[in-house]
Length: 114
Length: 111
Image (tube, rainbow over all chains, first blue to last red):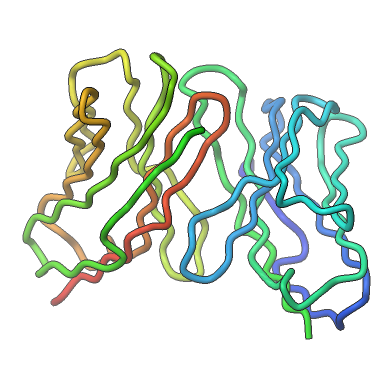
C-alpha cells in the first residue's frame, strides 16, 4: 500500500495527558500537512513540512502542539496536556509540492479527550 | 486571506438525477488551483476533481464536472446520474499557498 497512513486510528485519553500521532506520507512526496477536523466542519490547516523543515504553522497550533519530521519522511504530532477542546479528527496529507499540488489524505486519527 | 464558502450545509438528490453543489472563494492570487474533495462517512478524503485557474475550460471527470466562473470566483460541482455511493461530505478547496477548505456540503442520495 503506497497511500498515506496514520497511527493510531483512534485514541481516547484523559484530560491532561500527552498524546502523539504518527503519519507516514507517500514515499516520494516531500510535503506533509497536518489538519484538524471537528464534526461537521472542513479540515483546518495546522502546519506543513517541506522535507524536514517546518515551513508554516497556523495560529490554531497552540504551544501545547508540536510537530516534527526529523528525517523528512514520517511525521509526528504531539499534543501536551490535552484538553477536551482538542477532541477532533487529525488528518495528515502529503503532496509532491509540484503542480497541480494535489494532496493525498490519510485516514485520520480520531482523538477523544475525556 | 483566502476564504472558501459553501452555502449549502446539506443537499439531497434522487438517485440517477443531477445535483449541483455551490462554492465561492476569494483569493488575491492570479494563478491558483481549486479542488473538490469527497469524504464518505468514516472514510478518508479523496480528490474528486481539480481546476487550474488559468485554464478556461471546465474540468470534467466522468460524472463529475465543474462550472468555473473566474470573475465571479465561483466553482460549483455538478454530479450527473447520482449514485448511492456518491453520498458523502463534499469539500470545496482553494490553493494558492496552502489549501483552504470550505465547511462542506453533506450530500444525501435518495433511492
